[in-house]
Length: 201
Ligand SMILES: [Zn+2]
Image (cartoon, rainbow, N blue to C red):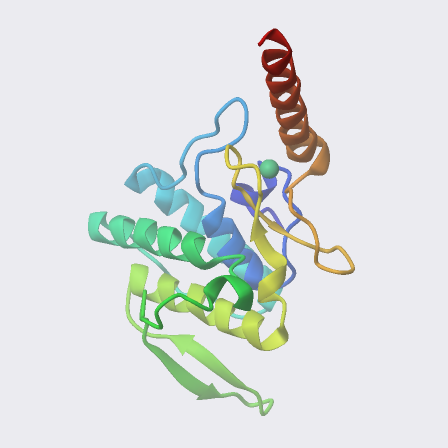
C-alpha cells in the first residue's frame, strides 16, 4: 500500500478504508522542507486521487469508482478537505457547543451483496463519487469507534493527520521526536526568555 500523501510525512496510517480519509487530509502542504499541496492543481489532484483509490481498493477488496476530476471537482475536493480538517479530532467535549448543521452531503446507495453483507455505494460521477466514498469511510469509522483515533498533529506548523495507536488514545503528535520535541523546545526557550526578561527589570 502506498498512501503517498500520509507516508510522505511519516504518519502512522489508519487501517482499512479510513486511510483514504487520512490521505485526503494529508494532501495539505506541510513538513520541512515544505512538501507540495497535492490539491494545488488538477493534474496533481488527479494523480493523488488515482493512487489513493487504487490503495483503497487494495485494502477494502472492493472495486474503486473511476473518478475523473475537473476544476469544479478540484474546488469541491479542497472544500471537503477543509470541512474534514475542521471536525477531525473533535470529540464530544469539543463539539458540545457547535451548532448541529450539515457541512457536507453526499449521495450513496445501499447494495445487498451475494455474501449477505450490505454496503454503501457512492452515487454520482467524478468528485461526487469520491466525496461519497470518503464520507462513507468516516461513517464506518464512527460506527467502529476508530474515528476518534484519527487526529491532526498538535504542532500547528505541522497539522498532518495521524492514526493514534496509543492504548488510551492520548497521542498528540504525528511523531513525538519530530513535533513533540520541537514544540517543547520552543516552549522552554520562551520560558527562559521570559525569566531573563523578568530578571532584567
Ligand atoms: Zn507533526
